[in-house]
Length: 251
Image (cartoon, rainbow, N blue to C red; front, side, top):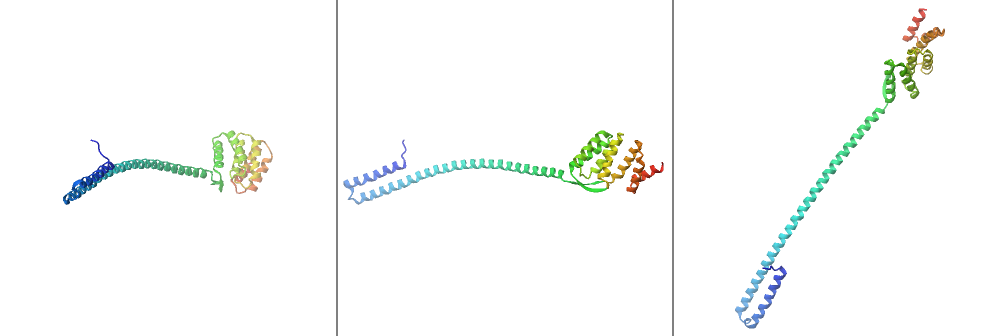
């Protein structure tokens, strides 16, 4: 059975209401009971139309409710998707912040490695660069190992690279000592003379003079005696001066 729409039912009711007055006009219009019956019929029709409209409205409300439920589900899906995106972005932000923190920690550590360090050299406090300290200590370890040729090369490179270093007097002294250990007295004398010329106030200077005197003695140079005398005169309180006195007293 075909269902009528709201507009179709209204049209049917309107046609019925139009037809009924015409029939009453045909013979029943003057009868009070007929008029009363007509009014009752109209009331029933109006009641039926109201009930029908209510039913149609209820059905429409249900459809609207279903639409709202469907829209709500779509909205919830969108919200869930947005929450997922927010979680991903939050993780990416956290990772980026961690990488940035690690970068600054690493940068700070690297900068600290480049900062000058306070060290004690021959009883004196000095500021030296880390690379400068590492280079000197590497040359010193080579000297201690007994590889005097390699040590001489390392100390030569050091004094050329760091001429103003607080390690320079010691580096120059150990350069001369490396030559002396190899029995290269001429090179040893030349290297130790640089200590006396450029670093006369260094604690290494008396030792440098003692090595010069030893080399002069090795070369049978009569200047050795004068070098020992100058050592005692210039650095009287040094241990090298005490050794010089012993050598002079034995002659």
